[in-house]
Image 1: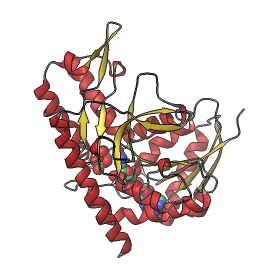
Image 2: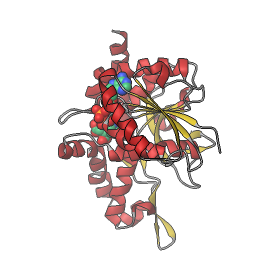
Image 3: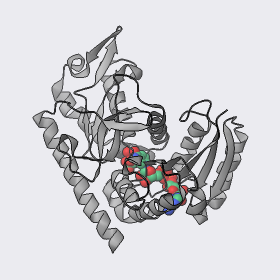
Length: 332
Ligand SMILES: NC(=O)c1ccc[n+]([C@@H]2O[C@H](COP(=O)([O-])OP(=O)(O)OC[C@H]3O[C@@H](n4cnc5c(N)ncnc54)[C@H](O)[C@@H]3O)[C@@H](O)[C@H]2O)c1
Ligand SMILES: O=C(O)C[C@H](O)C(=O)O
């Protein structure tokens, strides 16, 4: 059997981690033959709760779980890790936009960038879930100069999964039949969920989603807005932000990053922008990517309509504004 892989989950006593830890520890992410040592980071007041999580992980009797390291010390949490789920941060409440969390959360990602730089493996793959995820990922990478910047990503997979579910419901097919939805830009209400390159398998043959949906007005309005506002809709209903679906999306993102995407399929990830599709450079922007041997690559050559161009520009501008605000907060 392989050597155990060290994986850190921050915010390990929180809502998302409660679902995520089980998914990771039972092999959903790194495969059924990969033993794991889980490092669990939270803040000192949460150590009692974390103790309960550690008890439950033990009580799951999971064969792949070779060790658990609960801690409030980033030096211990990030030591020698190959994968990092950065979940720990304040969630938004009813009536807030995700960017309202910048001042509360961005400093956490400076500190954790520095700790990753010092203690993690140099090829660690980092997924930022804590909001505002794109800008937190950018800041984290800036404070970890010894780790390649392409190893820092932000989660827009939940938006992709939401988009996939909306399309599957609209055309009344199982969700697994729908793929290649794209989330462009920020994990915020300016994101652009784009179905124009998506495909659906019907009776064994693959068709374009817009051709099957036959309702471009719906795709440009109700569909886009539903996905953009889904996080807020869950908060309004649950009085807490999404957790189970966020954990599933984090698993999907890291699994595809480690194990690769299927032929002809792409997924969306917030990655450091190289300016593809006219996005601003040096922000963490969500693009369609394919992944092979642990390396993601932005899918090139997709047609961008005038409608899409407008929405891409809006979300890119928001990311530039967030970057400026984050730098001001950190340097204050
Ligand atoms: N990108 C996405 O799609 C997505 C989806 C859902 C939620 N989120 C975000 O994920 C974050 C976590 O959500 P949650 O519901 O699990 O929140 P939660 O409040 O239930 O848990 C957060 C945990 O993080 C811990 N924490 C705070 N500061 C920390 C630090 N410096 N180091 C380590 N741990 C720290 C808290 O003590 C708490 O246990 C929020 O910012 C939320 O908005 C992102
Ligand atoms: O919307 C939120 O604040 C939580 C999360 O980012 C989500 O999309 O559900």
